Amino acid sequence: VNRVWQHHFGEGIVRTPSNFGFLGERPTHPELLDWLASVFVAPVQGRSPYACGWSMKRLHRLMMLSSAYQQSSDPLPLTLKTDPDNRLFGRMSRHRLEAEAMRDNVLAVSGHLDTTMGGVATRDFTSGRRTLYLMTVRSDRSGFGPLFDAADSGVSVERRTVSTVAPQALFLLNNPFLLEQTHLLAQRLATVDPQNSSARIQRAYLLLYSRPATPQEIVIGLTFLARAAKETLAPGSVKSPAESNLRPWEEYCQLLLCANEFLYID
Image (cartoon, rainbow, N blue to C red; front, side, top):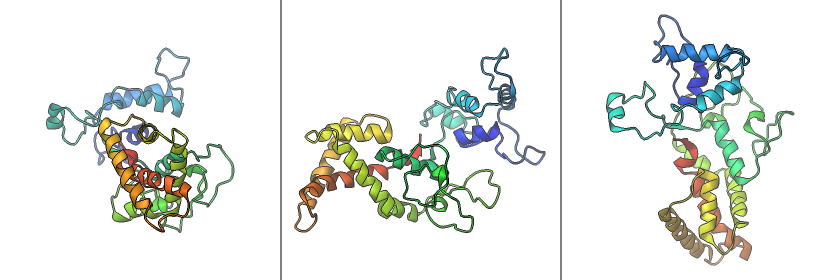
């Protein structure tokens, strides 16, 4: 239960998830931890409406429907002053998507995520299969997973490290897989309304950020697209009229994919 809480909230109720002993940290909310553990093992046919019957899916649902999980990451001034480190979970702690979720999200917004369940694992990073089915080579600590702090499969990892380094940004800007997904996303947006760029921008924000774009963001997007279109018209910059229409949108989609709002959970 503590590990599942840590997955959703960034920190566990016990901050030392592998050490509940004397040398580990005390739980910040011991009654909550005990209650969650009791309803997790309680039979579904019992009296408690929160009983999970050992179902991990029910436990995830119970935590994610709580008011604690649905808090904003913008704290109230008094909450921030009283608990600046958020040890009491008075707000949502902002955290970056895990490597697997990041790759799956990119495939999902481009419309090429393969949701088929089960089957043989693949070593092809460019395939549309969910990252869950990418084969892990323990001796290989290069590539997308280790770059974005995926867990080391050779050891037991109680929590993942979160690093912010320049190669991560360079990967998002230059990797052929990301550029291909950017191209596919631009093609997907092109099916909205070819004559209404504002509608396509709104569709992009709904796909990537699950919210409508603000008027200011639409103006910024239109300005960016106009400038990119002028650069595309330069002699020798594109090979066909279709490419000249799509290129500005590819650049715009890449910009949106690299934004913190797409990579972080608020």
